[in-house]
Amino acid sequence: LNGSPPKKEPAEALGVLLAALGGIALGIGSPLLKYGLLDLIAREGHFNPFRFHHWLFMIRSPIFIVGFVCMVIGGLLGFLAYSYARSLVALPVTSGVHYAVIPFTCAIILHEAISAFEATAIAAIVTGVLSLSLLSRKR
Amino acid sequence: LTLLIALAGILTAAAMVGIGGPLVRKGFTQIGSIDLKDLLHHPIQYIRRFLHVPSLVAGFLLQGFSWIPYVVALSAAKVSIVVPMTGLQYLFLVTFAHLLLREKLTVGEALSLLLIVSGVISLSFALA
Image (cartoon, rainbow over all chains, first blue to last red; front, side, top):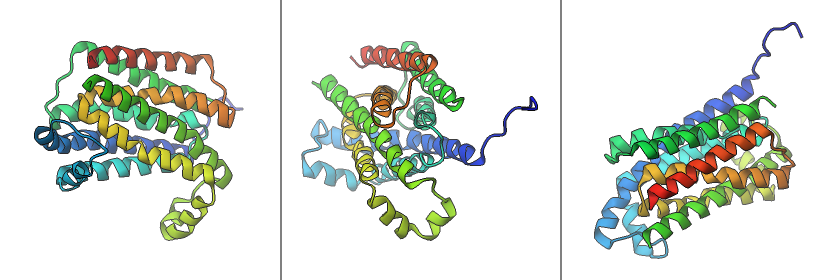
């Protein structure tokens, strides 16, 4: 009313922070899961979720377990953030950070390189996801 | 075949997360905000409270098990391509947020969604 910008609610800021931290955890977890899968793919040719011994093989891989723990932590942080944000679409922060971080973590952990075309498409998705978040927060 | 496996994994994971999200949110509207300190002090009481809300349980299960098709997709293609393609979940999320929570989509949000979908379609060419 006095022209000053409205103060952010601490709960909402905490929700966004939790969502961003969740995104970083997911960004580290995904390439670690793939790293764990690479041994299985090298031995069996592919991963089949309906073959029990494939799961057994993976849960014996420490890197896969670390990746899985990162994914669980990321998921839980995102889950907690749901209770703080005002609107459902205010939460794409987790995914936006996840998608933005992934080319870097994949380059470090898996030595995956992406083309300029792929980088542009990823940038479009990240922009779309984060703008969806920002626009919904103005509600 | 590898391309089909990757696409099926991405679509299934995106649908599970996108439908699970509004269900979780619907559950939280019934429960209300969570006090983080209280949650850490009395986790069992909170879990019992969560288990009494069917939409929360269904949403949590859908989101929790979405990692199975996600791992299938990861095993079939490049991680840096598969992960951003799961952004397709927002198409499901916005649709189900409207159906379950009556959340309305503004023009700006629709344009953001269009940007996401165009990015995902572009990446699907890179996947091939």
